[in-house]
Length: 279
Image 1 (cartoon, rainbow, N blue to C red):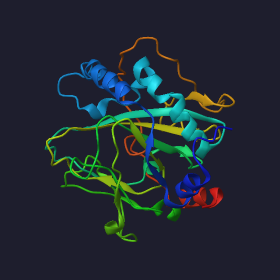
Image 2 (image 1 turned 30 degrees about the vertical axis):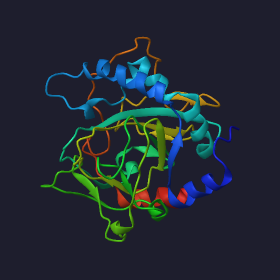
Image 3 (image 1 turned 90 degrees about the vertical axis):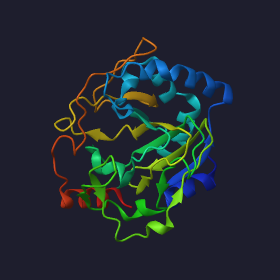
């Protein structure tokens, strides 16, 4: 088993739910990636937001190769073990002076996956800090399990379904500041959010989702779910995706999270899931 993280980092992730500023890509690699990014953005249709760039790793070898970069997989293996797959990616780009925010939420609340034990890697394409809208996390909030999410209207959040954080103190949140080319990793139950970008500097990030091979998707909710084996034995309980051949490509797809499918989260069902996993 690869041990890219030391024992303290692994314990910190278990207790805090996230890790910050893990080095991956060099300045030269990031220069190249940012030079190629316009080729991906050009595939958006007029009026589409960069938030539409979801799962394009299924069509773009450039994005697929980022998701499968050995250095990232080494970190993930230290946390998930030797058998896991990659299944999702997104771009989150906040242009200068963007008022869009992301309300408090848990990633796992949106995903029809069981058991709940996935994680997200956040790749910084730019330097990220409080001024340009860095993600904020509530340390150790993942240890409380799933919390209620309610529909919120009338704010600047791109999410309408947001977590009830009344049992937590948002003042204890910390900003995930990153240098470009580095990554953060967070647990799928960690409460996180991000403010708008009040600065004159872009804030671009690329997220990648990984799960142990034992995690199964409810295909009735998301029939488009596809996995790409990353380490260890091939995942045989979910449909496999095909590795793309063209460097720049896009998907035309209706994405299906639990919220997007119109499904409701059954509280008792999720409590049962968490108790079975064992916090």
